[in-house]
Image (cartoon, helix red, strand yellow):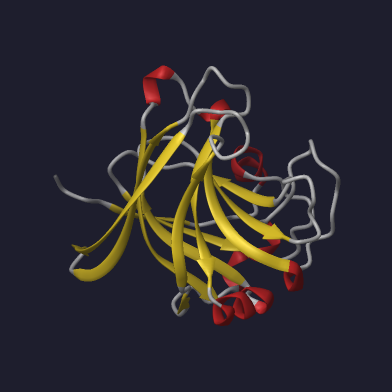
Length: 205
């Protein structure tokens, strides 16, 4: 199968804002961030789901491998699982238990980026702050195209809270981690189980 690479360029146009994120608080074009250089985030990768203390039955499993993609040797994180549609607010995901060096870099980062091969569904990256106590973390939701390599570029100012939680100011100094998630509202019997492959998770200073 031929792999086609795409880059998700985050324009501040009204149409795109309406599609993938809220424009509130955006103050400058994404082009100001240099996405040609970045520092690889490091730590221990993990998975999680609503089965852990939330009474759900969703699952997520990860396989870490060395692969060649687009002529480069990379470490990939392939995540597969199933999000229950019988349990309201069901979810599953994966994340990086960052080491101290990476946590410090999160605090001053101007943007994050990563490459992913998705399954055609939407996914969310969450920037977790210790000041958020109701799990309503600042997040950015992005689409994927099944079987295609996509580079997702997220300036820090694009992380915003959903409307359902208590509003908390975005303060990078309070970061405790970064996670990715899919949840019940994005899944049906037709697009379960889910499957993604991710690599090159970079911090852009």
